[in-house]
Every structure is written in structure tokens, then in C-alpha cells.
Image (tube, rainbow, N blue to C red):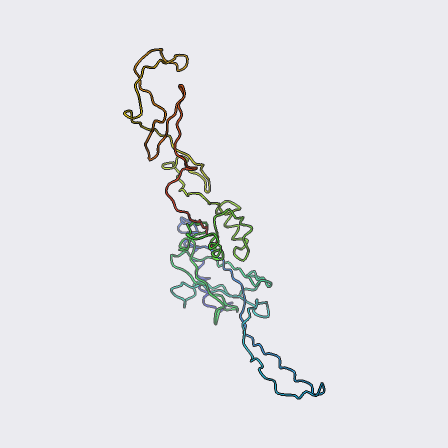
Length: 345
């Protein structure tokens, strides 16, 4: 039987939680009360070693009668640091985790003690470990987890990390898109921090030094694509489930609309752009009664204005066409930026 009071506390607390859930009829899903946090790190150790230059070999008097003297200008010994991947069981036999509320680092709220290397998925080649801290109660405050390379989580921790439960995570969630006022080259320096250019890059091609395989799967599940979104040259538009502002209601994430101009009308200035004349309309051509009357006729080059743009009207016989503008797309005033996406926590 364990003598650890914290483990006894956990054994008493867990049955109470289950009883509480039973009494309220599971009105609130268990996942809303607690969740898991996966801790990942690489176990390496910094060692300080000393470099001692070899002592110069004095000349041999037997070789040419050279007189032996005292070596001069010998470099002094110098310390240097090396980082070595920890190997088991030479460096450690157990791994322990203690979880604290960050505002009270003296009280352990969740102990996960005495884990074997296999329990933490230790990779003796890379030094990587991963361990699921389960049953962490959701909180608006952050937690701090400390890692110990011993059986009981005592002494100086190997390292520590602050984290939030997902419902209170103040960091940008995976899949967040932000405008970045920097070049693509400078955006590449942010990759290690989990930010990537929205240029359609294959998620599978991202280095495992930046994204673990399970993180790649998570990202693909969130954006529903094997590739990062390609937002080069595009504007973003919020999904409108009811079609109130976007007639193409409830579009899927990443759906791209082609350019379009809404139907509209134009007024024209008769005082400037028309002339009066007697015109005979041919019934066979235009389908109206053959009469001679005083009518208004639009002349070539009539300007039709409105809506901050204009059209020039041209006609031939009874067919009329209009054209307007000289650009290659429809756009508001804008400034160019790069879009970045958050690919991991």
C-alpha cells in the first residue's frame, strides 16, 4: 500500500466525483469537467567537460643533438558544454509528473508518479517522451506541470511547462488565421513557433522537428485538408449560415467564391446624351407597330453613371451593348499582406 498522502487523496476524490455525476444524472458531460493534456519533451542533459591540450613532446637529443627545452605557449585547459540524450536505465529509471495550479506551486493537485520509460513512450534514440496527464479539471486559470526523473517526484524538477485546459486556452487555437505584415522569407522564421504561410504547403511535408505525426493528424482534421490553405491573393469572408449577408448561405470552410458583380441599373442624363428625331421602327425587326413618331434615341458614347463607376453605351441597329471599367478584377482599396495559420499549440 502506498504511503503517499496525495495518492490517497486522489483515491478518495475520484469516487466522490463519480457519485456526484450519478446524482445529477450526467446533466453535464464528463468531458466538460475534466480533460487530458499530453506532455511531450525531449530528455537531454547538459554536461560540462574540460578540454586539456596534449603536452608537446620535447625533441629527442639523440636526433640531431637538439637540446631539450621547456615547452612554451601551451594552451590552457578550457571547459565546454555538450548536450547528451538521456539513455535508460543508466541515466534514469522512472519519470514522475506533478501538476500544480500556477498560482500555487506548493500544492500538487495531480500527481502522476513512478512511471517506467515504457509508460512515457521513451525513445532512446531521440530522447523523446510523451505522457497523457488525464482527468485535469477545466479551469480559467493555468496549470504548471513539473517533470522529475525519479520515482516520487522529489527534488529539483528536470523541467516545467505551463498550460491551459482547452476551454480556457488564451493562446491562438490551431487553425487561427492572422494577417502578417512581413515577407514570406521572414514568415519562415516563425515556423518553429507553429506559424506557417498560407500557401497550400502539404502538411505531411512539414518537418517532424516542428510537427509530430499526431499533431499533423490533428491539424488535418481541423482544416479538413491534407494541405495548408492557399490564401494567396484572396480576401476572407465570414460564413453566413442563414444567407443574411452572403447569398451563398452556409458555405464550407475553405470554399472559394468566384468574382461576381451584383445586378444593378444606371441612370442617364437625357439633357446631354439624347437627341430627338423622327424614326421609323421596322415591325419585322423589333416587333412593334410601324409608326412614325418623335422618340428619344441614345447616341453612341452615352455615359451611364452610378455606383462609383460608369458604362459607355454603344449600339448597332437595334442591338445595344455596354461595357465599363478597365481593370482585371473587382476589388476595394486594399493593402497586401501575407496570411499565416497556427498549426499546433
